[in-house]
Length: 125
Image (cartoon, rainbow, N blue to C red; front, side, top):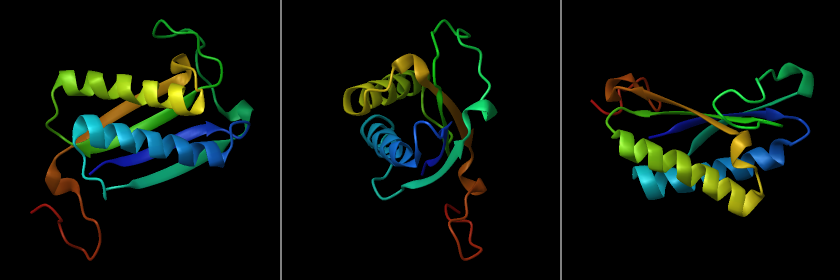
């Protein structure tokens, strides 16, 4: 079950963020084998002066970054994670024309017992 948190500038707009979420979920299902119905996402849109990022850190040329935070269950291999990052960047470039250098991904893994989808229940226990 992935939980997405997407951060971008208001110049890009919330409509774009919803499309970003769609493409990230597509990569999560295709590459990381996340369940198709496990789509949860929070979107934050900021004034441009509230986004601070070094333009070349990590060997890229960043212009208007889109930060994608993915929280998901622990257990995927480094190869799956690498393929996921590539699929996300490719999907966003092909469908939304986002520059791959502007796509930053932070993946967090948590144990299954850290999830409750409601009702006060530990969903995976």
